[in-house]
Length: 324
Image 1: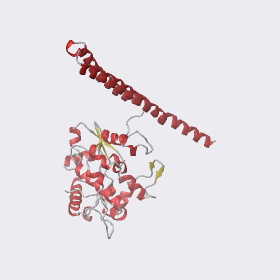
Image 2: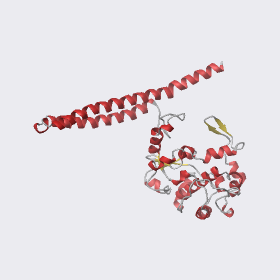
Image 3: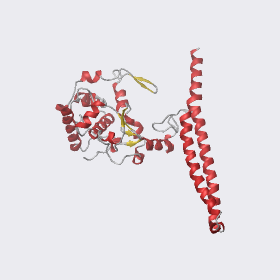
C-alpha cells in the first residue's frame, strides 16, 4: 500500500469518512459521552463539549513531531511501520498509555507509548460532522493507519483490549471489517490526505530528544535544551547522569594516556619523535575535552537549578504579591 503525501489537494466537497458507512461502529451519543469534561493545557483548559474543534486538534495533531519531520529519518526504527502489539512483549517492552498524539508510537528502552483509539474515529457520522477539515482529517487517517499496523492478529486485538487501547464495545469481527474498509479506501484514493508523521512508524525517544536538543531552531520554544520528552530533571538524577558520562570520558582518556606512558617508557618508542608528539597532543586534547565537558555539565546544572527552583520560586512570590 503506497503512502500518500501530505500535500493539500483541492476538494469540491468536504472530505468523507475513509471507510464504508456499514462498517461504522457505535453511535454519536456514546462517542460524545466518552469525551472528557475538561482537558488541561499550558495556557488554561479546553472543554470538549463547548470547543470540540480545539479538542480534536489537541487529540489528533502531532505538532511536536511534524516540526522535526525533516530529521525523523534519524529517529526511525528499522521498519517503516510500527510492530504488531504481540511483538512488544517479545522485546520486553511494556505498553504505556499516553493521551498526547505526538508521543504515540515513541519507544524507549523498555516501553512503547501508545495512544488509545478514540471511539469517535470509528463512527461515520462523526467524520462527516467534525473531521472534514483537511488537517484534522489527515491526522485522523494517519492515526487509524497506525492501528492497522498495531492490530493484525487476534492476539494483537486481545492485547489491545487488555491494555484498554480500544473502545469496550468493539469486537474482533467488527474491527476486521472496519480495518479492511479503511485500507481499501487508502488503496483506492490516490488523493487521500495522510499526516506526514505516519510516513514513519515507531520512533526512538532518545533520538527524538537529540534532535530537539541539537537543532538550533528548536532551542528557544519555551523549554530550551530539555528535549522532546525530557527525563527526570531532579538535581540528583541530573548529576547522576552527567557524572556517569564524565566518568566514562575519564576512564577512556586514562586508559589511552596510561598506554602512551608505558610506550614512552620503552626504548623503541622513547626515541620516536612522531609518537612523542602524538602523546603530547593527545594529553593536551584530553585535558581540554574533560575540562570542557565538566564546564558544560556545570552550566547545565546551574540552568537546571534556575529553571526548576529559582524561576518557580520567583513566580510563586509574584503570585503571592498580586494576591495581597
